[in-house]
Length: 425
Image (tube, rainbow, N blue to C red):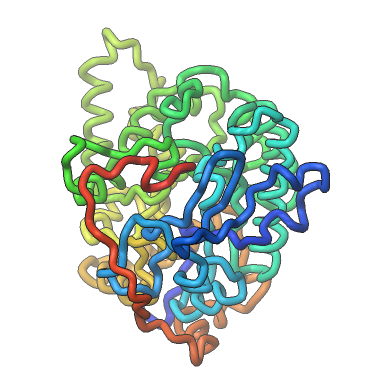
């Protein structure tokens, strides 16, 4: 396969919400409690919500910046690439990268939508969550039909309200929802309780895929207070293995066999050993632990219910056939620091070239699996021949993708805490 003939759909990108987010979708009586942007004396922009300040963290919007200007300090809308928050500019950046479709995780409310839970008035909290979802579905995704996969945020404080929102947004053709990879650090019941059953049931009924993004539990990997931030950056994606083990041994898939979960931004290179370990543990310990997967092995349960996602994973690409190419999807992670924008096609093709994967297997991972799992049909909006890397890049003439320095250098600081990285993740 030639790079320009590839079709790319990313199931993990991010949006930096624009300042007018709540202007058109929130009932008037809740306008006073809505988050709003404040420009601070130090030149940064923050969202103000109650007593909470939510900054645009540097690492969350570094697309188009040179690596020496990466960092965790807050930034402003003027300093970040417009494609982070402007839908028209985002599509141009997608075209320049040869990217057909994109699923965008939230920034302001946190990956699991927990910011709104800070309101004591849960009716207002529900109104904010619904307004956010309506903005995301109707404006961010709806402005460019066929280019985005809608993703809703949950009303994480109330499983019945979560279920109702899953049903509501499904009527707007949104069949993906975020959920923490571990609710316990958020002070919520675990995956092993029946607390979440209304939510799981709604997702099963609607065919809604549940996206568990790394860091959505608000807990990052911090080995020691004085460890350099490099330790956390290296370990964070692999930390998703904890959610994988939790899910397989929880009652979720037994009670709701139609539920599918995507492990977002977790990579895939770790999966073969994890599957071996699952089955070894099951065979060795089930007699006394009581684990019971019926006539299946634990690894089979995992592969029947889990969607795997990777940004750049050469080892994972080599092992893709062993893992299962029908469960693997790709990510771009724009505009975060791990993004492969604007050279994702070349990066992926370079990794695929080191394997003996067929064109059919590559197509499955680069777009067909995403289309199937997320009920996404871009070809209903534009001919397939206009969806390739080459065709999309031909529409991006004049889009400058060269890094632009803003003149701000960030100082490295060890021992970074989760509150410094993202107050609402």
